Length: 106
Image 1 (spheres, one colour):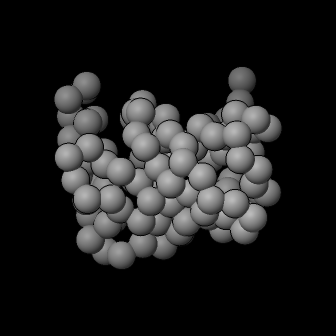
Image 2: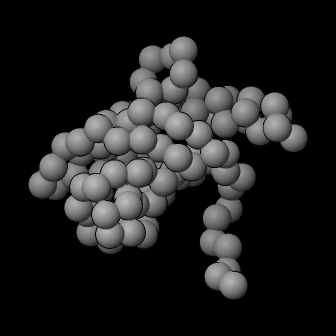
């Protein structure tokens, strides 16, 4: 069994995201989300530690924007990122969304 490295509770989602890396820009889907990171389901190529810009389309809200570091890459499936920087308002709105979803299921 793998050690759990995540420090924040995660929710299962199906949220559209646009991501930009060094070599590409693509539309994809976030399938797993927390206040500190997410998993992006996509066929695009990234490298560990690559800096990625995410535009996350939260339901019924304006998009939030995060700079993120690739922490794990799964070939042809997607990649996991840790959020590294964002505007305060974007962090607050993402946090409120995640906590509201956790409250609904918990």
